[in-house]
Length: 276
Image 1 (spheres, rainbow, N blue to C red):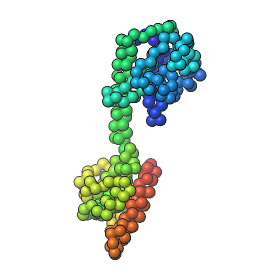
Image 2: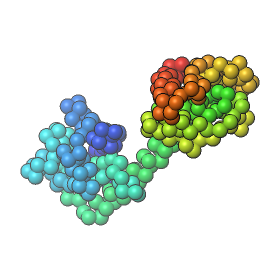
Image 3: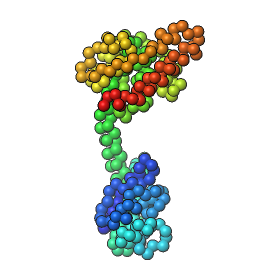
Image 4: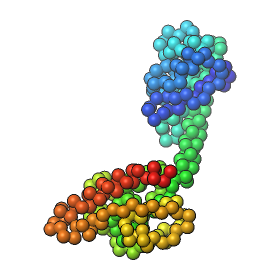
């Protein structure tokens, strides 16, 4: 499609349209005006809102109210915008082109720009997926180690997955694993983290290649197996089962689990600083 200027805006996390690419020369005031566009405002915003092409035969004389004042400042006349909609129906952005002369866009031209918008949306999606995969590959691989892999290390793994999934690949293990503690599962569930599917295991059951090993009990720190290339950091926490051994009721015992759970959460939240 012949055009003197063109723009692509992508839907941002704030729901607005953010300028992603531009072809042609635009005066500084126009650049500032089109940098971020609310959905529903101007040709691009209306295309996003309506999920359909928006056309103007002559921006300079248009009285429909569709074009914003900044659009006239471009000096262009015929203009069209089309939504970039992915195959699953998600609005990804808006593409627009404009001509120096007055122009009426045919139905075939509108369909062509819609098809191009879909292609741009799918390409954008593919790029984002690729970037996400690269980010995932760059996550720090962390192992939380204790003796039984039944309580503290399981809580730490659960918190790391809940709080740091984009930065940390979290695992847990025990030097002498002996089963998942049901009160640890209950304590974490109360905080909104499900670890019921976890299982107790040894480090060798997971493999090697860890960047950091956090020992969360003294005995595990003393008996930490050799894990080539891993940095070992000790962060000891009280043992809830030992503290709760004399509790008269399960509810009384839960007090110990909740306290240690919250202490581990606070520690896990600081891990990005610990492993810089």
